Amino acid sequence: MPNQFLLTPFFLDQPRTFDSRAQDDWLVNTPTLTESDVQNRMSQIHESLAQHIAQTIRNGARPISIMGDCCATIGVVAGLQRAGQDFVLLWLDAHGDFNTWETTPSGFLGGMPLAMLVGRGEATMTRAVNLQTVDEARVVLCDARDLDPGEKIALQHSRVHHISDVRKVLNSDVLNAPLYIHFDTDIVNPLDAPAQSYATAGGPFANELREIFRALAQSKNIVAVSMCAWNPEMDADGKTRAVSMELLRVLIEEEQ
Image (cartoon, rainbow, N blue to C red; front, side):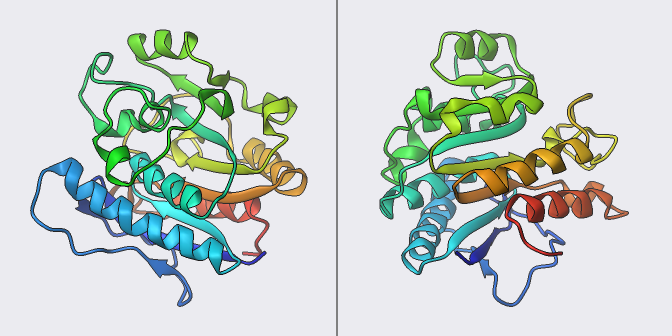
């Protein structure tokens, strides 16, 4: 199955420029946003992305979505559902993204999308794209080494499968199904990929992830991939872009 890259160059509802070396055949998701509040503007982005995702699958291609924040996964999931795609969600991230308004210490929407997808907390954006709640038992959260206290408790009392050691992800029986993989580049140890807005010490190095991604690509049925990208304003030397894009290419088995 051919890969179709889709670039959504926004951070929440604000445009962001990514030096991702986009090719001519990439789709770029840049809807014209009407004046509204932040969540409604984000929902316009997500709706446009959902349409691209669904059409990509109908065209017989696999969507590879590059985005500026993890909330854009709402658009990806909605698009997969519209195309009738069944999947298990593998979420690779240094953070849990499992906060709700009751647990968040910061009020940052980017810390809530996984909770939104499984029907917890804020639902404005999931309702806007008619997203069907994802079953927690069909979600695998990997790493999440930086959890807020309330978020940690919520995860412990959920049915989400939390694998803290990324090296054990291949042993999960839950992953023996079609997979949608979401890869937040801040999972990479910041010594290898430092240009992250919310860098967290520790975590797997790029060479460790490379081997895991290669095994996932070879042994699993991956129906879609999304990548929450680095902060380009912090990446003056291009190191983080290069590491992130190389890992993505390994995961989808594409030559550099």
